[in-house]
Length: 323
Image 1 (cartoon, rainbow, N blue to C red):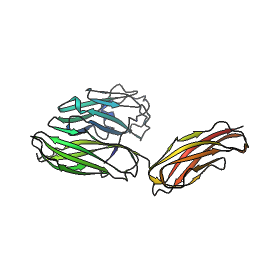
Image 2: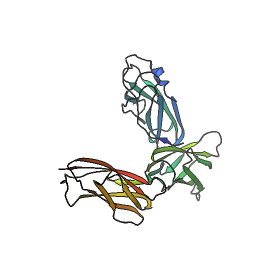
Image 3: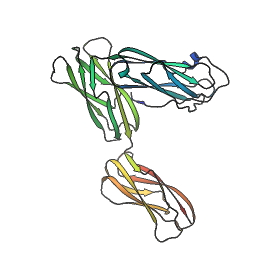
Image 4: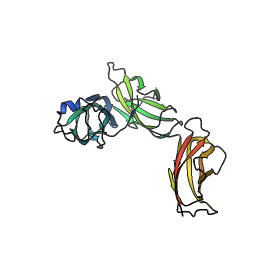
């Protein structure tokens, strides 16, 4: 399945000390095995824990036993019963063969550190080009496709390729042989209904070598909302109450496909907005007007409604002062 890429969310200090073993047991897994990986890609994993200590927790540091791995904490509070995460990134360019790295997490108020482990087996008998399946930024509903080449230098052949997430669909075909190397074109297609967010998952490639070993290929994607408005908020200059001419500013509304702006609600007559075009377009220019009838400070949320089938509305905050 897809997993959110998250930073560490832990909690505030404790008056009672607990041994590191108890803190390690809070995590849903103490060891994550990436399996067989090619040399090149960055491997990412998020460890999740549940705070069952009865008191708040706050992480103040994370260190690692090897420079090939980086771990992050952000010091946020996790209340009793809440969950937090530790995020680890492993650089496969930094090792060949078996590698096991311990991540030591220090919590405020505890003299000892909790421990979790990442491990992988770096293989130099194959290459990926590019070194991961990275869709980049994708607007929700738009879908996306990317290709990569997988090359083996040891006579192996691919028997199966599958993604842990159903949001990524795969096809693979063998390319014309070039000398002693065997290459495959791997085509990954992102389903348009994938939810908004930053995600990562894995493709596992099985070879005819047999056994349970799978080659792991990282997959990352940043899914943006179907609608974007820039800027996300509008601050007007000071206006004269009861003036004949309103103050005006423009915002840009972008969609994953051509769309029409149906209406703009929420201005209560103080703020109004109109689109420059009534036709379906991927980008609309919206003119926002501020015309106050009395003195004071005004703040509203304009609801921009479109004719898109899903996620058809986006909001923009507007503020202004009248004298």
